Amino acid sequence: MEALTTPFPPTRKKPCFPVLDGLRGYLARYKRERELPVTYERLYDFQEAMPLTDAAGKPTLWDSVIYRADEMSALYEDLKRVYALLKVDGDHSIMEHVYVDRVDFCSFGNSTPFRIRVVNAYNDNQDYFYVKKADASRVYGLELEHLLSPNRLNFLTAGKTLVEEHIAGIPGDAFINHWLNDPQLSPVRVAKEMVKFNERCFVRLLGDMRSYNYVVVITPDFEGAQVRIRAMDFDQQSYNGRKNFYLPQFFKENTPIVTYCTKHLHAQTALQYQREEQTLMLQRAELAHLRLNALLTEMVPDPIAPREKVHELRASLALHYSRPEYLRCESMGELVRENLESIRRVIGHPGRVSPPGDFVC
Image 1 (cartoon, rainbow, N blue to C red):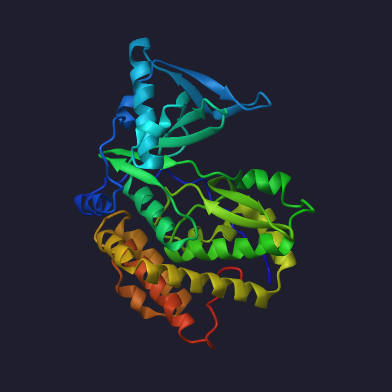
Image 2 (image 1 turned 135 degrees about the vertical axis):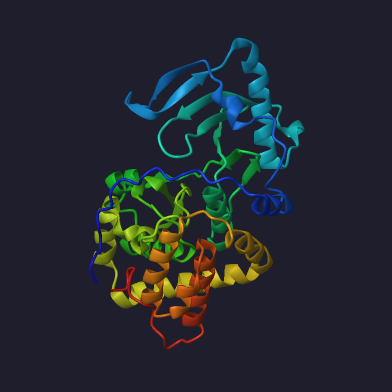
């Protein structure tokens, strides 16, 4: 087994796709679409911005923003209401002890998000949530993550505004630099999770999982620590035409962890972990089949990627899975459906090996 890593140029800025009526109806049906007291446009009306530094005094990509004195108090109170909607379905009565401490803005990336820092007055515990421009790609990515991964996600939409909860964990680049060779972590457990993460991204077509777009969650267990990798950026859901863009192992930023994993994992073991994740994804799809079908029904006609990118990707996937059925697909939603069908066929035939392309080389 060899580490297959290919440098990709920096991602070009993807257009922001509007949330169309069909998708908005889906979101309303499952209580994602709500009336919110704060919109992205309201937050964007700040007066000053000051660079935010980290604990070591180094600059970050974030600025702390300040609003007009006559607006700040009301804005912060409304942000508390948004937080209550996100966490406890709007029961503001149990949030009286919570206050908004700071609002940060990041001009980097497609979503140019606001990050709201919320503090518990009783114990100083901090939490965060994000307010972003609503983008259909990101919404599909969040919902597919909720349905097909082991992770549950809370998010809300309102018109052109998207609110996301904070995904806690060690940023992937920090994990690679400071934790990868920690003797307390089992190399095999890290490698196992990377194989599973790689497979999840590929099947549900979540792209651009460079090391700074995912987090690593470490959970102490009675024998060592368990590791889980979670995506935290869903902007590049089903947009790119390159097959390898949906395989995290192919990004040069992930080269250290891919090399580490291939060093500690036998090819047959990697195949086992890949098959385990395929089976789990199908089980999740079956449990949520009505909701997943409703989502893909809206995703199929949604033009979230240019036709030439769809055709480029379908040709690669048809070759990868040896299934000409892909060549009939005319949208990214159809390709996600076909990927699920491909792994269903693999699982349904125990003697059939998975096609090459990820950690099974």
